[in-house]
Amino acid sequence: MSEAGATPRRLGFGFWSFILLMLTLTALFAMLGVWQLNRLAEKEARIATVDARLHLPPLELPPGREWVGLDPEIYAYRPITVTGTLEAAQTVLVFTSLSEPRGRFGGPGYWAMTPMTLSAGGVVFVNRGFVPQASAQAFLGGDAKAAAPISITGIALLPETAGPFTPGPEKAKRIDWVRDPARLKAMLDPSPSPLAEFTIDAPAGEAGALPQGGETLIAFPNNHFGYALTWFGFALLTPLLLIVWIVRQIRTVPKNIAADTPFH
Image (tube, rainbow, N blue to C red; front, side):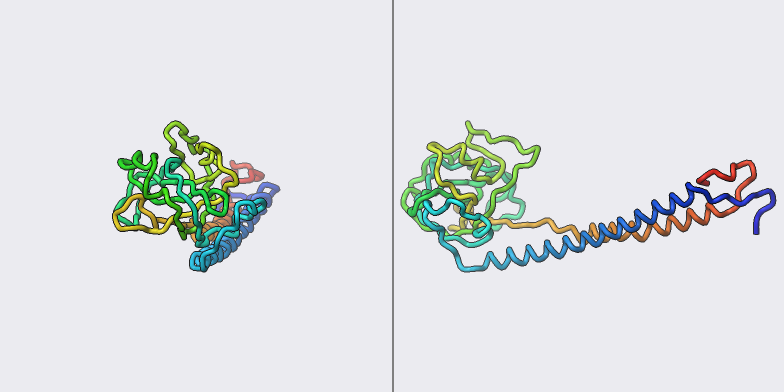
């Protein structure tokens, strides 16, 4: 029943345009929710694949002369056995912060990235492990224990990607911020060739010894379920708001408000 002194609102172009906009947004939010669920399935499948690869038997690298066109994805997250000489005097420190160490040491520090000259040819960077900041400089020189040829079975990891705000390498201090062989190579003298496009994380060694190996951390951010809930929530909220708005639009309004005003 209309109130005295009121006139019905005329439902014009603005009314129907707003309804179309809100319905379009509802469909868009629902599509984004479905897309996030698909991304969730993809991420969970990748995590399962990586976990399975971590437990496969170790591979051996082919001779360095056969590395042309070698796909690093073949070795990613796989145990790899390499034999050669660690060039400890060429070690480069890569900054990190170990928040949940498996060994004794943690907190701010560095990965000791040391090139290994392989017996079969080629060079690969071996992440010998974590060293605290206070002890880091001791690992930039030679190490008699690393001079003899050794075999290491560790996890191969693809290069880390430098972000837009990642500092450049500090060549004078032999410090970098990402584990990227292409960047680390610039601090070696002479420049190695061929150089593997991945790094190898060394396993844990003697308890309390530095560098502290066995600290491989493989984490894939997986917030897609939460994102999906957010988008689906918007998809539910938008039509509810639209219904409230429509009810307000079809209510009567005082005569002194123009009947063709698109919004109340």
